[in-house]
Length: 251
Length: 247
Image (tube, rainbow over all chains, first blue to last red; front, side):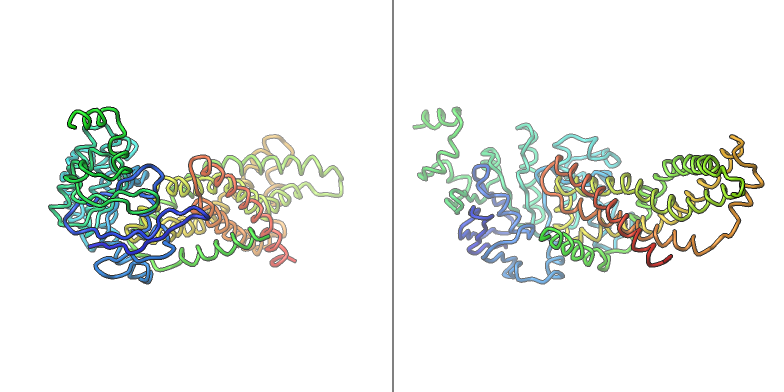
């Protein structure tokens, strides 16, 4: 389980998050939603230690990540998988080498074992015959899937996804969402997804946290979110003409 | 001045992490050999062409300048040898490599930074500074002296071949000249310079690439800064080493 307690972060005079507290449970896909520039990605980076928090606690199974020393942090990070917005695949390595990389770095597996594991992870994300291609030779959706395969290669306990659907068509987006959900259940991991895609919210939102005005504004799940009375959240959800009309028709 | 201290301090802090214990030696070894090929062997053609023709030009210029009958013609070979060994090969070739290798390192690491590849390494628990920079610094510092020796050889050969072909010097006089009053310490001096400059080029470029912030425009800026700072530092250290070793 991952818990955030009173996270504060500001850049200069600009506040990004104010006293943000939340619990993210194991085996569930936890979504953080909010408008662009609301500080979702910064919050995610604070959780994984890429950005320093000004104050607050980031508790991984009760242990504060911020107070850990470098070795403890490096050890914990081996239990973390992350899917970046652009995939962040290593350009100079092939798809197979990308997936093998964390295994080669942190395990004592033989080359055959690593290949077997890489092939398993790639087949798990429905990718075949792409092992020897470079990231520049595959599509955006495939890059995201390779990134997921790389993230799950070391069987992480925590999976962080930063806007996994950005730049993808709706069909591929749903595929990626389903994949994240399946992997979360299959490996019983704590998954945190940053998104502003309402399709994702409805597909995989076991828990949904809405950020507004630098604070946690609303917390619930994909079943309750459509019936919210919260004005800001309602404005966020029903921003499209299509959804507005749908809401009006449903009364 | 504040900026100078900031960057110097951050450079040394970065280098402290670069020289920390690798997570897995085998992975670093693979990267090291990849960099030997990428930074070293790929630079060989440009070094060969430049050195050969520079040796030829130095020879012809020396012959053109030595018009006095009191200056023996073998002085042409002597001049070509010392010019190549003392200055052209270690310093000028390193300046050229600061452009080629320096911009390569800065843009490669800078692109990795802006495309979040470095963040991905950090998330995995990899010491990104050591993983990205150590193999480059080690490989280029090791391979550059070999490149410089090849440059010296090709420069002297270029002077010999072109000098004889253009009839500015005879083969015997040139050969006598390149052996005349040969001081082996000059080679040591050149190799010390080559090693120092290689370290400067690889580490300073890596620093500029690693701390790139922004997008493609900033990657270009980092690359330019890397070449400029490397060139300045090479010239400063060239003076310091010459004063220290030859004065």
